[in-house]
Length: 468
Image 1 (cartoon, rainbow, N blue to C red):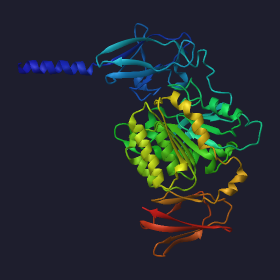
Image 2: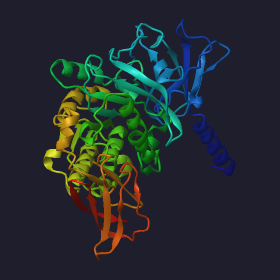
Image 3: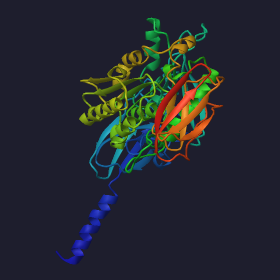
Image 4: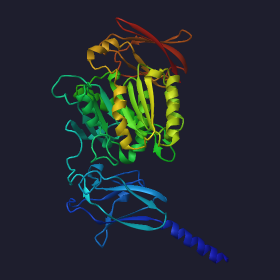
């Protein structure tokens, strides 16, 4: 073969490669599509971003809506939206439509498609959420991330007819918890499950659902960076939940604020960030539901983090995986559970469940939610007066610490004094602790092992911590 032939052959192959695209052509849209609507494709090719400007469909001369994407060869899943999951396409009845699935061979391909209905304008426009579910805020500000987010709120059936205070469960991927109309792959049915349990005698629980951030989901759901997929904003996200959202919920709703009555739960990446949030902020959360956790995203970091953060008080953590998921899900989950033992948690404080037919899917998490919730909150404090029996588990965290210590378990009006002493007997702090809600800086302490003593008018506690 001549040099020219080689060049021509290479050029032809290169042209085929760069033109190897998948074109989605929508030949018909619902008659009641609002005028001026933009239509977007959201799927595996853009991290399921429902408002991605790069996958907005264009109206061509034939009156068809088209968009070209460049997925790798293999299975492609997607849906059409009008810019959000609240305005996702529906089935012929205007209700939930499963993901569109096609097999792409890597060659230039055009697929003709029809959008039957929109869930918010079809017969499913009222949604599937129970009447005691509400949108608390469509645009709640997240100062730690300088973003806004929709927040869902489930209130127990007797919330408006009693003066009860309730435990609270914070859950991620709020779009998928209550309503098929906003879920991209089916809802968990959290509201129906809790309403059924309440009718059977369950005390009740407030659920706060936090929408994921679409294109920010992977970033927000991991404090660790994956060089391929992102991450790195999990610290800010958990700080938002613990320091902004929870105080707002506690101030505006009848909640039991103590950690003994507060949980966090999520699936996949939501499971990863739930485990991190529980371990990092044991002052806030004493219960965690870890469903099909994506610990693979951060390698050994989740287990290492748990092992390095000693138990600060009684806890319950429920691990769930499906037998049809990759074996690594269960293996990594077991590693994190083992790390809990290293951190000082007992066998009774963790539960590992592997369901043989379980898959990495909403239907599986929906099926298992009620059992997990009942185990997690079986011993939850449901009366503020009962906290007198548990406030002795004062918390000092994180441990090890780098720049600051936090405290929990004290009444703010109590006269509290704090002393920090090195192993050589040197006193580094001896002062009143005027605001136990604020962190205490320890930047001036050399790295090492320290004793910390907290005293009030009625009690005294001594513990140790490590300064890194």
